[in-house]
Image (cartoon, rainbow, N blue to C red; front, side, top):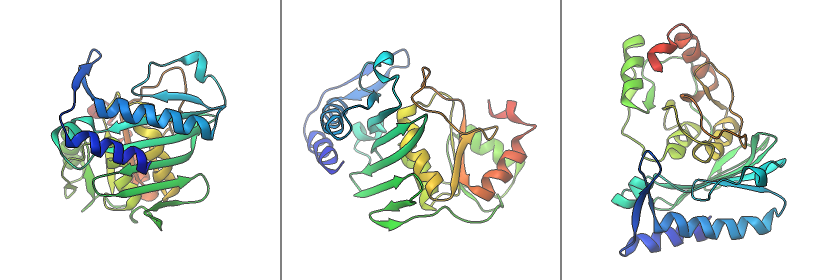
Length: 251
């Protein structure tokens, strides 16, 4: 992970190519591809039998219909990376039977390494992390799409919207760290955006689910997900109850 982070930093220091891809014209850069290739080579040696699912590799569904797979976003927050902002990350998870079992999220600019193993807790730079406590939405620090933050403020006044975090994986991991109390994700995020952060949130005592409270499954034929929320366990329950009869407002 640190080698990948240094490669991305080195690439960003000079002139590098960038372009767009797909129907949504999402950005991609030389840094994304270089990190993708490095991680595929390194991780392929660690678990040779694992499949591979990455934002920057053409999906081979037949090649990942196995019990476990690496799920990778070489640079999550490419727009921030291209613009020179600090909040981009490298996200890696090992998924087994649909759920992440090992997670690593590295923010190279701030040198933050988040790690989790299923059943063993989550850490930031070696120190344990945990979600914030409590079940109240009053005074809760939250991040995500503005339309969600505005709608929640209308339902529960007193919430505290925070500055945008460009990397979705990092936004969710800030919940695991306890510096955010809850975070939203719009529909259309993919396995590679979510899998590592998912394990970090759960191992830190929180939950990442869809808006009905259903947990996510990874390395499935369809890799895109509906709208999502992450929060500490008790606060997550409060929010699910609040939204239960109002889901169309958050569609």
